[in-house]
Image (tube, rainbow over all chains, first blue to last red; front, side, top):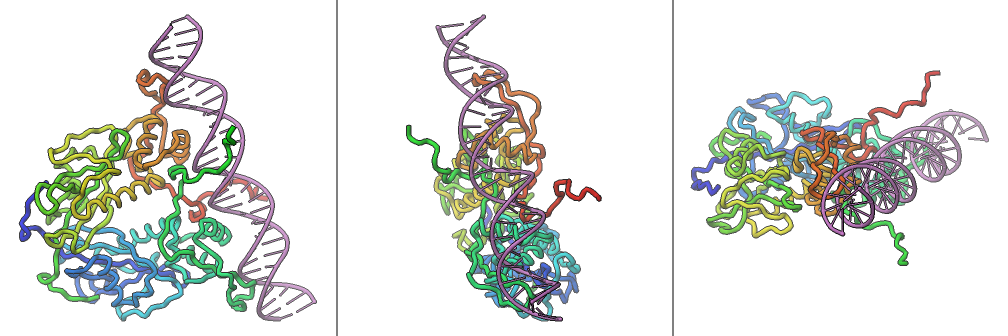
Length: 242
Length: 242
DNA sequence: TAGGTTTCTGACTATCAGGCGAAAACCTCG
DNA sequence: CGAGGTTTTCGCCTGATAGTCAGAAACCTA
């Protein structure tokens, strides 16, 4: 327990902050990757990120380093994903990397540096290090969270029609969902609300759609199984005091 | 991007692997903590763990270090929780810590070192560093996962009655659940199955209870909202090939 | 004005959570 | 040996939610 290491002899490791930045583009979910010019993995695609500076939190670091790629304001959501520590993950020497999941709303198209590009997550190019595996982790996390949180707000524009929101969900989940159900479920959970306005008609030839927005731009969770939920408030009635 | 750090000048940080080990003891959820003999935080209680050795994965490291406290075999589950990187989290100097969540089935009572003890999570003593906050994170994770996974298997004995399982869930969740519902829900999800045997009668004076076990000792997930689930297989009928 | 397209709304079904009470199975006490 | 108490088990009922479907509504173009 009280293993006493003098500060000098404690093993230390370079630490990277990485980001899996996802966005729905043209009805497909894409990940932001940059192409490595040098060995190792020259030509392969890697996650944006970099070394953790001495006086910075991992979260702050990943946000700042992303700012070198895109305008920070585009980030709708950023959460810690997992930490990879395999001693062999970098052939040059041991590094520890903490990956974050970042989401960008679909209506934005930030400019990217020349070495950086969007790649559909279901057709990734050759990836560097363990970054391909990290992207798969991020996908899994996103798809789970779409089901029981409101992360959708970070993938969708501030205002949208149900059809547009459906496209975002279909792209992110990878399978079809019906617009009717999506609308009813999200409305019932209280994460969606109509703005009262209508979509600009005339672009599709059909009935103009109502515009919606997410109620809260904060992450909130909807507990799935009521069995394991505290009884909160019971339906009244019952014991009519006899 | 290609920020070029020579290997020597890359900042490096001591990395700790910590574990929040939880167990239901005497109908209350407890966390395993050890009392620090030295400054900083002398006398305060800390999470077990220690420095990450040069050639070890974080997961392997935390498992090995726990083995110094308790027999490893008692660990029913171990998963990565989160990584803390606040530069001020250790007054002696910057360290990065990755926390794991470990679970021990309720029927075991492993011997602990003299400085180590179980503490009810709803009445923790003074904790060192950010460890109190990490324990709260672990609690949140456990309680969420109890609802949509089968992690319960890692907290319960290999065979148990519904009443016993209910006690474990009540303790871990912190609020009451009914045995009837717990049984039906878990059976319906297919994570629970009867062993065919009965509990040894005579210890409680009532009807002997049937014994159950968890179907899989592996972590499995039950997707909560069917809306966002792929249509898998539809209920037959309908198009009776005309 | 007619036809096509898209969205919106309501009805219907199936499944699941949750509660309640009766019946079953065991014990202990008289 | 029977009565009463205790605990578990099982079935029934209610309410909420997921999912599908069809028809009405609203817009455009020809």
